[in-house]
Amino acid sequence: MREKSHETIVCEQFGPQARSYLTSAVHAQGEDLEQMVRIVGARPEARVLDLGCGGGHVAFRLAPLVEQVVAYDLSEAMLVVVREEAARRGLRNLATHQGAVETLSFPDASFDVVASRYSAHHWHDFGAGLAEARRVLKPGGLAMFMDVVSPHSPLFDTWLQTLELLRDPSHARNYSVAEWRQATSSAGFLPGTVFRFRVRLEFAAWIKRIKTPEAHVQAIRSLQARAGAEVTTHFEIESDGSFTVDSMLLCAEAA
Image (cartoon, rainbow, N blue to C red; front, top):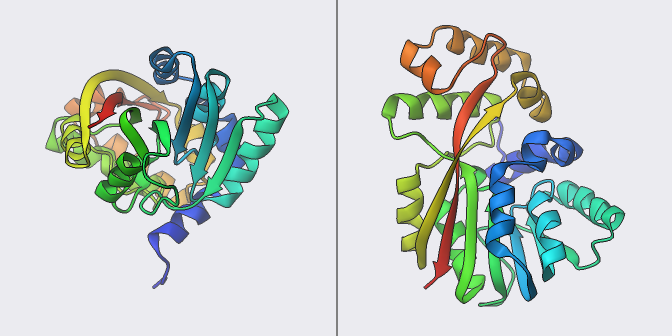
């Protein structure tokens, strides 16, 4: 048995693959990123925290609109890639900071905007991460949370979580929109508008990006082949294994 913490597993999964997340089409583009930019608009005096920044795509999009962006991630290897790309793009107002979302090393009310994309489903303590996001956000500040969400169905939820975990052992959970609303409210946010999207995951790229072991790849494909009609339809499972998931952008205000 391995005696490794969840944080160690996350770093092991993403550190060696950091550059692949910079170049990933799913992460580098998307309707949610476009909507995020429209919501934020020009805020030349704002300080922004990109929480669980991954390849840095939220930070790259927001840096030209604000005074400063801090890209924050558990993986130092990921932050190296973000720093190099920020320098290449000439984004001098983009800083990086390493750490866990559950224990942010920033003073209270440090940021005007907090954004997080495709990160929360890896947090080992969802509530603590949201509470820390609220703590470092100024009263009345804007929060935007973007992630794959669980469908409102036990059947579909089980399938989604199973495929995610087989692909990547650092996966914790994809939460439903209702769970997001409840959790953000409990953390001290006023949850607002939710924008919903459908995101197609090209199977070969999806497993290559995180280097899923072949045994797990075959397990995923075996499950897909045995899926019922309802599951196949909802996830739009294709012959090559590609499928489509639900995602959201939740806007919230610091109460």
